[in-house]
Length: 306
Image (cartoon, rainbow, N blue to C red; front, side):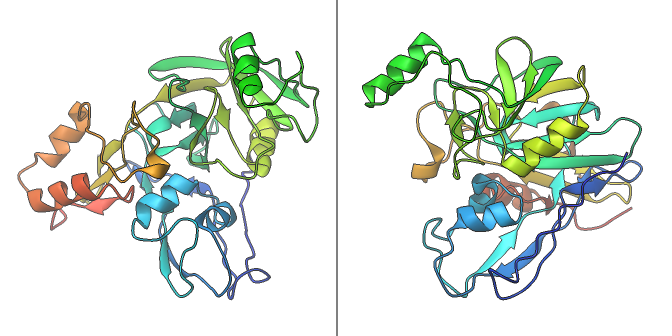
């Protein structure tokens, strides 16, 4: 299978040309993939959302990796970390895996040692994207229509917007131009908004940018396995003995992360992560710092390799 290599030429917009890929080769026994980049913000108003879009990241990924940067008006000359290194979730490397906590979708094409990683938007507070669920792609549709529920129509009406019973397909449809329907109630789809990837913005479905949902639509077969997880903490032991810890801010049940600096308590630390971080060769100060900083970037937590 020929995977997309997402090349982004930023020279016309920024002061340098850069190329980023959302495709990763998975080496034998490896879960740490990709690499990070540094990028200097040029003159002019460049919000983090714009830079995230150009580098195929979600806004939350960019904000976690650059916590001291104003997301709306980052200062020109600021050096950003572009977080394209990550630890693969400790799940079956098959089909689609959606990790709500890090707002990423992983697609493992059948018969390859590759993974495609895409940023997503997920459900709002009280309209959460499901977790702990394994299903499949039931069907796909180009030009989906949207049939908002009575509750959704009432919510829009309260804001002064009257929705029709069925929103027709097209560029103004909140479902975007393509949809993959999973289970009976949810979809992985596009969006008509220019903001919101990497945020909690939907009514529970998974949103992607236009190019990303188009690629999934064209490459993911019907009946593909889909798994929903919510794992803000990941860890790995690589083949050379290096141990890495990646920590994201957990999803809150009481506030919007974009507008708060409050840390959310971890509900639990997975058993596989505990085993790794409690290893004798691990530096506990590095572990504690990673748990506090929550940059979403893999951190090496042991001082030597076997």
